[in-house]
Length: 282
Image (cartoon, rainbow, N blue to C red; front, top):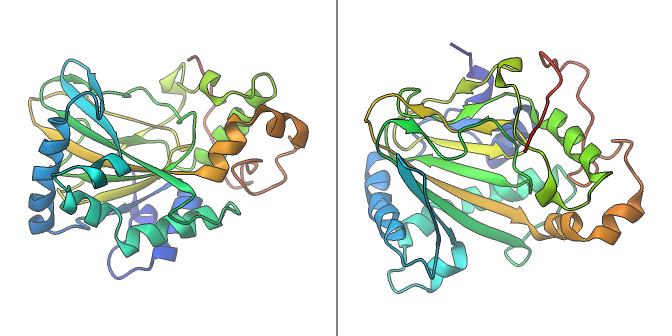
């Protein structure tokens, strides 16, 4: 069993503690961050999001479960209010964590220059969950993942390759030399056996903050145990502009990995080792 001690924070801790741990390891685990009462309150919002019409969400059915993607603004404007979900994902604490995290990459964000979306997932029978193969996200972001059920390897816990986020930044940037559109990134591992991934198990109410350049994937449900999760995604709009503005990317001509930012990713730290080079397919 992998030792997550250095990536796990127990109260009390500060927002900066959380952000610093994400930057160092690619993620941070906050065990049972929300109480049972808070989780119970969020359950109803989870169900209501899953029942929204397709005109308001992107629905994905993957056989053993389903997921709904919906924008924060859509929920804020809806009659149902979704007050519990919005309250806990956009608390002063979570907003400050996001700001502190992006500060590491020289990006100052506020409510006007960040895009927020939810991924609301419900896995309920044996099989692979959505996005279960190891990958990094083509458009990088910070994700706040909330476990609504006790989550183990047996019911598809999130898998992580710790400290892989610096290496994938270099791989992503090398692909930009050939095509500046991030949607054409080859970001799934071809041979998962080349790296060691580890499931992040946790009780209901546990939270994982994830730098989405850190290699990650869903697990496989080996038993019919329900797993419900909500992921809040934050994209910094200055970052999005740089990724989709072809001229801006091409004219910088800085592929030396010298700047500590999303635009010009960091090199792999000297003390970081990876078992083998990553080979990506799609």
